[in-house]
Length: 306
Image (cartoon, rainbow, N blue to C red; front, top):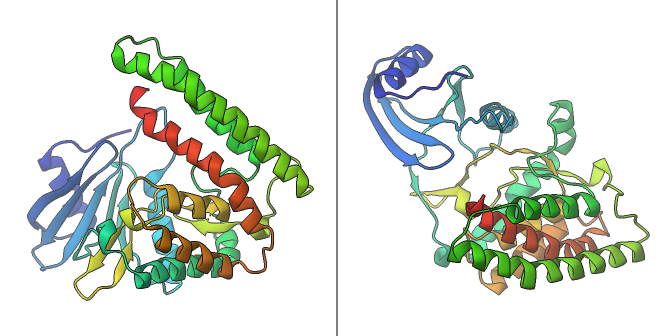
């Protein structure tokens, strides 16, 4: 796969895509995964340009997933997402509407913001059947049975325990995994299996298709911008697809990028569950799976070691 690396290559690629000279190019975000630029064309149009991280070991089409998700949502009249403009699969470039806004700090999140997030999930829920017609696949890291979730955590655990590096940090990791994580994982796994049996489910039994929901997967205020007028725009749809609503709820509460008060968390859960009122089993599944997703987040945060 070809990558755009130099500013000259970036400029040439964008001119070819947009058909307009670039008069200003500014990098506004760069990390381990993607680089994001703001560009201004000579026709005074502003765009956000995203260069997607690509790795031969990771076969996920982040550009295709995000661009198609935003195109789908925009076509259905969803206004709280950026409008997709152009995509260049060869160079891994996505061009989107530039959103004038700022990141939302955890301490400023209000009841109204929580209700806005719930409303957005409601929009996605309403588009579930049309999402099937659009051939969306499961979201990244979507697992629809308790056994699949446990196996995913086990796989992450094996990656960590294979580390042969030495030093005080790795010795501390080894001690934590042996003395704290593994005993708790075993206890939570046993408890989850017992509780699912009480529901009459088998650990390998997947939730029904009708119970799944379209989801950005990485959903929360850490992936939003607030416009000057207060409107919230939802970002980051690289992992979009069908997911388990119990995972969506749990990840929203657990994500380390947000620090929500217990009151706001309770408001989110209560209002989300009202959206899925037809799904009488969901609240029980959230209670059973929440500890497992908490342990999974422990593994995600320890990815630095692998």
